[in-house]
Length: 425
Length: 123
Image (cartoon, rainbow over all chains, first blue to last red; front, side, top):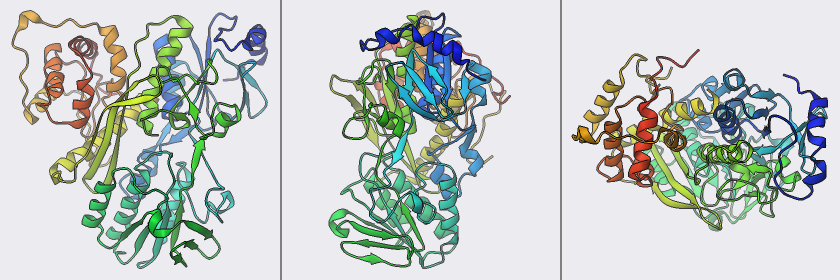
C-alpha cells in the first residue's frame, strides 16, 4: 500500500513548530499514527499489539524491507539439522490482513526527529506521532583485526539470520573429518548471550552424527565467563568428548589477526592455520538508524525509560529489543517481545487514552545442547529508577535428569511456535 | 512437521487438555463452588501478554507448551496457585506465578476462561 505523501506532509507540517520543545505531541489529524521500524520480535509484536488493541483508532505502519522474517532464535537448530530453513522463515502478510497494518517494504534510511518523520530508501517521508525503533543489532566489522564485511562470505558471522545462516551450514557440511573449526565469540553486550555456545553444540552435533568426530571446534572468547557456562561445558564433555575446546582471554591472550585468504587465526598464544571453517561473531551495537538518530549513548546502545521503553533521548520514540539498554534483561527475541507489549500499551495510553498498567517484563532462553538435552535460563523483571531489574531468575542445573531435559526441549519447541503465533498471526 | 512438534488435535476439548495436565502432576482444584471466582477479564487481557509468548491465544498447542484457553476459572486458579506455592514443577511458571496476587490470577482465569478454543488457526 502506498503512502500518500501529500497527506503525510499536511499532517506533519502543523506540528513542526512545536516539535522543538521536546514534548510529546500529537499531530493535528484525525487518527494518530505509529510508525514501527523493523519487523523482528520487537517491531512485529509492537505493530501487532498497537493495531489489535486500538481496534482501528491508531494508524500503524511497519517499515520493513523484507516479505519474510528469518528468526535468529532456532537458527542454531537449523545448523544442527533439527529444523528446516523454511521452518524458521515467516511471512508478515497476516499483520496486514488481520490487523490493518500497512507494511511498507523499504529500508528506513533516517529519522528526522525534529519533523517527526521517517525517511525511506526512496526518499519518501512518513510522519509519525510515536515511533517504535526496533532495528536489532549492527555488526562492528572493525572489531576483529583482519576481518571485515568483505570477508563475511569466507568467514561468515551468521549473526543476522538469513543467507549467512545457510552459508554457515553449507561450510559446516563441507568440513572434513579432522578439520579445525574456529569460532571467535563476541564481547558483551551482544545479541543472544547463550547463542554462540548453543551454536557450538549444534555444530558438534552435526559433526558427530556424520562421523566426523576427529574434527574440533575451538572457541576463542574475549569473555572470562559466558551464559550457562557450566551447563554447556558439561554437555560438551558428555556428548562431544574431545571435540570442543573453549579458551578464555587469559589463555589465548587476545585475537591478534585473522587472515581470510589462508584461513588463519592468530592469537597471542597460538596460530590456527588452514582452518576448515572460521565463524567470526564480531562486537555489536544498536542498528545504525538508531545510532544515526542520536538515540544511542557511548555504549552503542539506546538508553530507555525502564517503565515504558521510551527513549531517554526523545519522548516520541520507543526503542525495543537488542538495540535498547534494557538493564538486566538479555538481548533476546523473548525480551524484545515482552518489551514490545509494554511499549504498545504505553503508546496506546498516550495516543488514545487507553488503560495502562505498571510494566512487567519476562524472558526465557532455551538452548539445545544435544538431542533432547535442553537447558534454560530466564526471569521476571520490573522497572526500577535506574534500570529494568531482575526480580526473580532461574537457570537449569547440572544434575537434571535426561527425562527432565527432554521436557525442557519440548517446551522450547512449543515456545517457538507460541512466539511466532504471537508475532505474526 | 517435526516429530517433536506434536499439535494437539484441534477438537481436543479444554477439559481433556486440563485432565492431561492434572495427570502429569496432580493439583487440587478448589472444592468450594460457592466462591466461584469472578476476575477482571480486561485486566487479565493486559496480564496475558506474558503468557501468550508461549501459550497460543488460539488454544493451539505444540511441543511442551499446553493450551490454557477456555479452562474453568477455578481450575486455572488452582493450577496457578500450585505454581506460586512451588508445589508444581516448572521454573518458568513458578517465576511467572510468584509475581501474581490473587486478583491477578483471577483476572487471568477470567480472560483465558472466556476465550474460545479455535479448532485451527491456519487459514
